[in-house]
Amino acid sequence: MLNVSLRQLDVFVQIALHGSVRAAAEQLHLTQPAASMALAEMERQLDAPVFDRERGRLRLNARGRELLPLAQELLERHAEFGRRAAGKTAALAGELRIGTSNTVGNYRVGELLGEFARSHPQVAIRLRVANTDSIASAVLDHSLDVGCVEGPVAHPLLEAHSWRDDTLVVCAPPEDPLAKKHGLKPEHFAGARWVLREPGSATRAISERALGQLPPGEIVMELDQIEAIKQAVAAGLGIACLPEVAVADALATGRLVALKTPFLDLRRKLSILLHREKYRGAALEAFLRTVT
Image (cartoon, rainbow, N blue to C red; front, side, top):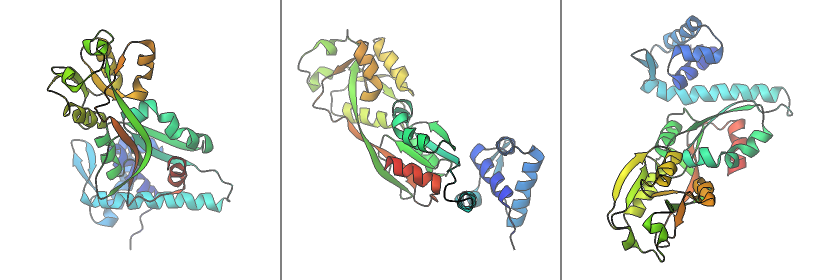
């Protein structure tokens, strides 16, 4: 009969999240030998490894990927048992791992987290900012509890809930000929020089959709941060499709100009992403109530 302890499950989960015994030991305030022994004992009881050893790092194998969400659920249920046993007035505690795409993480994080953080100050929020593809992948492999992304994500194990409407604008430096032209038409963009986000970004996908509706131009640069693109456009290196919320300051000071392009559809939905098989403990449920 298996007798896997909560400590062993905790070590397993932390190694899965951080990729090494050392990092897991630091998170759990254990010595590295103690964490190694806990993992070894769990694998002995399972009669199978849960990690592949690759150049000093541990990566979940198929068995580990199957067991990870169950281990997380057991730990969360144990914490919830303790909270309820302490009485209904016990405050929510623990940790919530949230991932956001660039626009949300840098420009809408207050909208996303503010109400929850104020209501539940004892819950530690771990925020990761990356592009939409990266966040979706992290929700899928259970390294994130929930994501908030800019683009549509289609996967049978993920569910998406609409959170906010978002709009992009085509930006140019004030001295660009397009910024001085009245009554812009698609043909005016022939040969335009574009600065784009990296592949995998929802902003990149919207930009490519817009470029498909315009005469051929030239992609002169790909950057993985919106702020870097703003600087490049302001320096006259090209034009770009950027979230309206991200360029409001630059438009207000005149560093950038928003081109009027009613012939382009630059609208999108921001969505909350969840794994369909993810256990929704008290902290996650409380967060979802504030955003859905």
